[in-house]
Image (cartoon, rainbow, N blue to C red; front, side):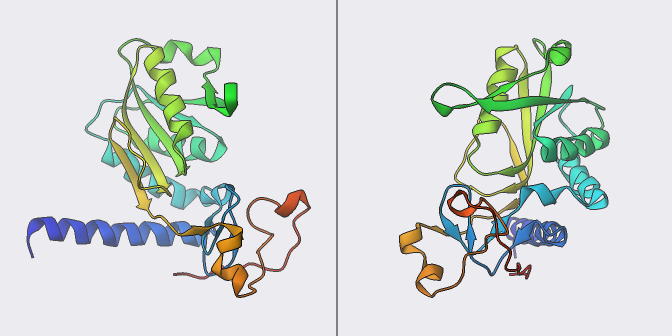
Length: 226
């Protein structure tokens, strides 16, 4: 086995371990019938609100991201959202540059485009020539990360890297280094094409968006591994 194959095998093993850790938080659910935010159906689901509920796990995963980007000097770790900010704190704490931790406020701009606003108190820390490491918990479309990149570059800074716990869309590409502890796509289906619907498997309405705008009704969730 050559070095390339050994590295690929090692990366696969590490990713499986990381996925197992995230599963232990209850955030990664599988072997069920879920409605995801796009309106499509899937057998698997990642509940981002649960990803950072275990402090010890979050610190350990944050350390991995920090060590991956340790060779790059970082002035600020930049996040958006509660879960990502908790993870970002762990990354900033572990990074050898001892960067500041900043967060941006996310919203929708024209035509529903994702926008982020940096609180004025943080302006002095993102300046021309400054370096930022963006941290996200779960990456789905990449729109928030792209908005953060634009914000940093508009202020004259540069993004030296992007770190994430889980990348749900491996087709996304960025112009700066990207690292995710787990890279895992899973099949999704239109409702009318969903094999689970065709088999009569009930939709899990405890997890994910409320179905049809109605309150979620419990039927129990299965948190079993794949």
